[in-house]
Amino acid sequence: MDVELRAEFAAELVQQRRGRGVIASTHLFGGQPLDLAENMRALRSSGAEVLKFAAEVQSLTDTLPIFDFATRTDPSADGQHHVLVAMGPHGAHTRVLAARLKNRWTYAGDGIAPGQIPAARMLGQFHFREIRPDADLYAVAGSPIAHSLSPAMHNAGFAHLGLNAAYVALDARDVTDFVAFARAMQIRGASVTAPLKVAMMDHVDQRDPLATEVGAMNTLVVRQGRWIGANTDVAGFLAPLKGRMALRGTRAAVLGAGGAARAVAVALKRAGAEVRIYARRVSQAKTVAALVGVRTGTFPPAPGSWDVLVNATSSGSGPGDESPMTGVRLDGEIVFDLVYAPAETPLLTQARAAGCWTIGGIEMLIAQAERQFEMWTGAAPPSGLFRDAADAASGWKTGARS
Image 1 (tube, rainbow, N blue to C red):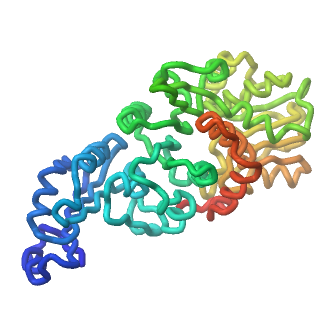
Image 2 (cartoon, helix red, strand yellow):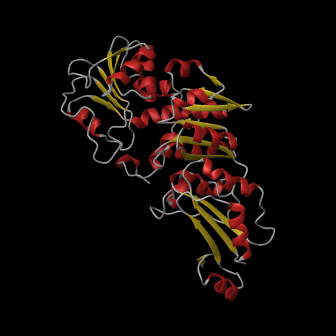
């Protein structure tokens, strides 16, 4: 039985049951100061068998006091177990890392509470039952991040190699929030996604040549305490195109002006394509084009102006989104949409109807993730493992969010 500690009948209930089978709870909302030690003292004095502390957090760093408290606490010493939870999207990782927090159990469910993860995903994608308290920590960092398939793939890889590692999703308020959390938690590696790819370049000790050329990183590698920024997006983008089209001399139109667009532009330029950047904000397109040494064009790309069209924006990922090329005739050869959820985006539907070859974002996602995994572990995942893990994850093909 779960009873809020401040309830008038809480003390009487605990006394009647002599604490057995009673969960004494404290819930804090609205970013109240955690004061974990004081709250846990009050819960412990109740005499309940299990003590639950749940606080709504506004950032990843807000969860650090919870991890710090857990390292200094032995819940088995006095027979009172605890469950420590950070509520909200920024605290979802505390539900996955229950073993590190020495929690008696964790809570899972579909849409029950903000930040709560469906039980099937906890078991299938996060491998919850196999996570040890001392597991090496890896993550995908960005915002929003709950929909990411990266945990499914990388945790499958760790399990295949028998590594004591856990890969979680971190919804970062901003880049400094992620950096502070990751350093405090001694993270071993991370996949960096929107909107952090460019900003993270200023927070690493070293950048690989490709990340420097792109001006954005999607991979954090930690070696002997040094943070290295790397980019696997370039290779990940080119992998699905191999054998489909010779890029040298082709005309490529890239939609977008973020970190992904930079990587795509560099990849296409290196392959010998004539690249133009298209963005609704002309100034952003010009900035990216100048950085990577390509040209710009007026959005949207006109019919007859491209052979390869790449959508490096998030357009098409949200419910009700239209194709970024709505109302424009598609007459090129290949359309590559980096959006992977849903699998069939409005742009891909439009392109297929126009007779273009199409490539979905899942192809690049898998290819770049395989390279990340090898950077971290020194071993490439078996062929097909990451694809099988992604295919087994429910919801993403239709764009459902969990």
